Image 1 (cartoon, one colour):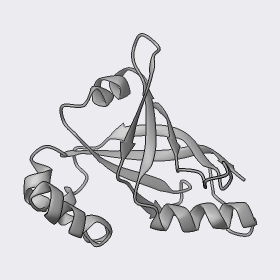
Image 2 (cartoon, one colour; image 1 turned 90 degrees about the horizontal axis):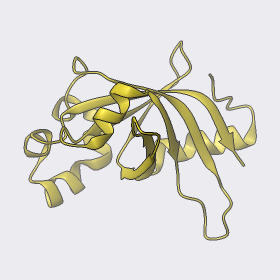
Image 3 (cartoon, rainbow, N blue to C red; image 1 turned 30 degrees about the vertical axis):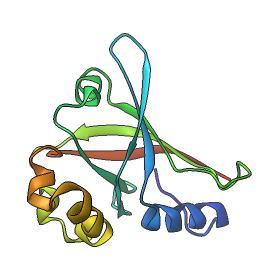
Image 4 (tube, rainbow, N blue to C red; image 1 turned 135 degrees about the vertical axis):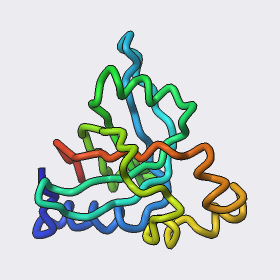
Length: 144
């Protein structure tokens, strides 16, 4: 699934994916209950497979159990105050323990480094808990 920068709404979605700091990730419990939580994320850009979103998840999160049972997710950016500027991405998520940890990810540290230092005690301290790299491959994009 490719987000097409030639389409104005997709170009806007790509801009927001590059700069927004918080998104909402929905996973589904094995019993079928959707669970939505705010997350920090990094748009990894277009790849031969269409692009990826990276999340460093909390190893204690229920989301990990959810993803083991069902890899389908929904990822959403906030709308503007009028409910416009919608970006929702459906995709498949993979927990990837072989992916570099957040303290070895310069792009992630550029985006969140100040917040990590101020709120979480630095990247190595944060990685003691947020050590589950989750890669999301988009399968559908809704943007308007």
